[in-house]
Length: 313
Image 1: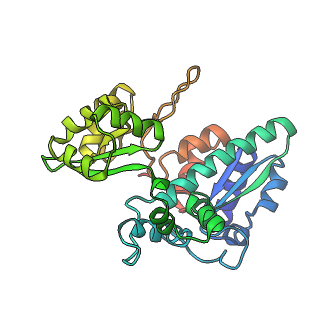
Image 2: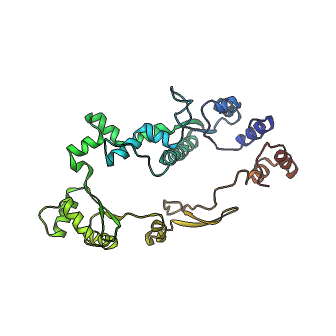
Image 3: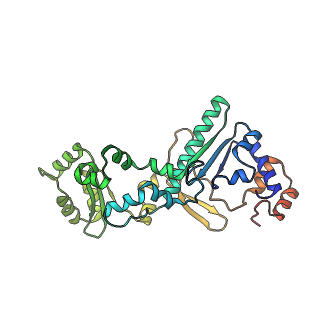
């Protein structure tokens, strides 16, 4: 898009598209002559989703960002460390939730904008900031605004605020998570164990007297929310996820056959499925330009030779 021909191709694609999604730093698309104000003149009802670290406005808007930056500034990194030791170091999240969660927000927002367009004929710009999205996923901030207390302080002062249970080690070295978050569940646990009071020490001893899988089966029988703490291969091999069709084998042009998570939500009328592997850069250039813009093989070949579009050759 830094070439005149590339800009022209992009604008032609916009005219036959519903959505433009980009995750450049704010101002980049405008400098390329492809900002929302320009694109809406080409297609007035275009949905323009701008994904960035800090949003299109505000004093931090031009800063670069990655998932862990948004996680740190939204409180997630400190809160994860506080679970272990409020006086200790912060702990980074194991996965890039700072990328995944804003991506989901963007997808939902695009669908909402399309529904609005269906009813009104109007397109719009969507400003999705990683930091904003990650802040919205920190209930502890509401707790702080209400009480003036850190989450770890709330949990120490009001132990039941985090529910009853925890992570418990089993005899074979595995781990079990028990979560009794209501009085009814605690009463059910008391009755099942035949005790007047349930303590963390009691649960620790009970779980440690069994293997991990035995402990899970035991507490399932009590009607208590319980789960084994899985490693990656155990997640992949879990029979429940297999019955739920949560895995699909895809053919990738360079990686071969790869097993990936399937679409997680089940639709009764329009079931979704992950049908293709992540594309290589330029993998679909020829298909898109020939079908949507009626470009000839010769036209596409010239664009590839000039470096205007990516090629998989």
